[in-house]
Length: 318
Image (cartoon, rainbow, N blue to C red):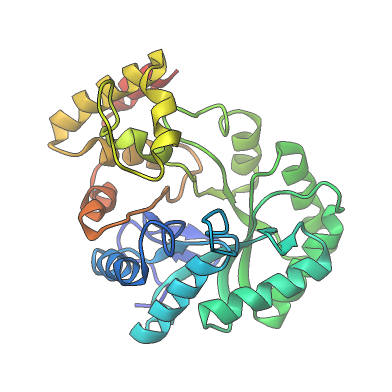
């Protein structure tokens, strides 16, 4: 089956068809070495997944890394498995330490670096990683359109952009007949709703953009393993611990536990199912450092929350 065919419960994303869970590649070459990463990728695809998210900047924050490590691991996996046409590969431009911003020249250089590391001649979904307000939308959208016309990129998308600039970008593409954003990658989860809901979500809905939320599990907090009085050995624990002693954090964990018990499921599955049920959301992004962490994530494809359960989670996270 190719990435443009639509098996059960896959979502349309422009001309692409994506599975209900996008596998985050931020851990590849960081907390998961290449062998562990390839094992996770194999298990993800075997479990029905086809949508893998990375960026040219992953994982430049790690001492000794320079950015591009995740793409390199993913490229080696694609080459060794010979399955490029079976998966949707998303990567990003604009945050690599040596190629920051969205000038036309930066985009042109960055895409060729990503293609080399990914060991492919096309990228399915290419995000502007962060908006660069020093560059007119016409400059970077024209550069992205050039990539689509050249066959280097199939669809384009945005991440970390304001509602105003997103609206402006979509209007420019429509006016000039250029490639347009088909997806948006916002920061969005049960303990961070105002980072997407409201004006930004309204723009996405109005223009038919698919949302692909990052931090879907709040750096692991929504897995339920971070609780008052517990210690978790994780490189991302700092991001999760900030929610542990908040009123909202406690309410959300209690609601997750209640709904998870009713479904005999993991809290992570419930948190992802809540996201998947939200307007515009096509596929939450979650990462797995080990194969053992994957089943709870993939289970979102087969779990539907009731209206009462959604209401409970909405109230807890308000």
